[in-house]
Image (cartoon, rainbow, N blue to C red; front, top):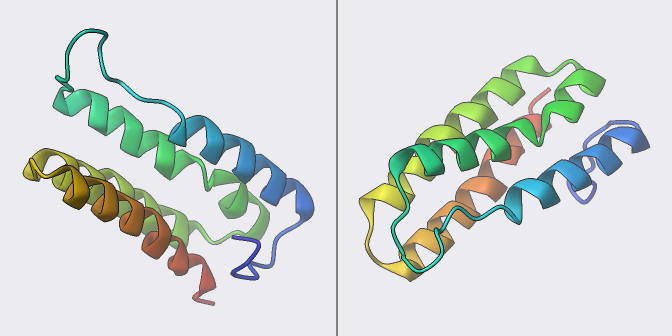
Length: 107
């Protein structure tokens, strides 16, 4: 978000970094199995959505926050549950994380 030049105070960038790191490093795979349930992807999408909350608080761009949240929760679950191809899942979820942040560039 710093690279996108989102006009926010430094504390928002630092808070986003910490929240995004926490969300991205959370993986719900149970030990000994590759099964991940739909609600686990829902929780992951919510975590990704909440990571940008500091930007919404700092800039007042609540529309961008809700657009990002809807994209993360909806697209993330659709990509993860709708595909059995690991490359499609990883690239699709990564692209949704990046593209949905562009909403914060809309004035």
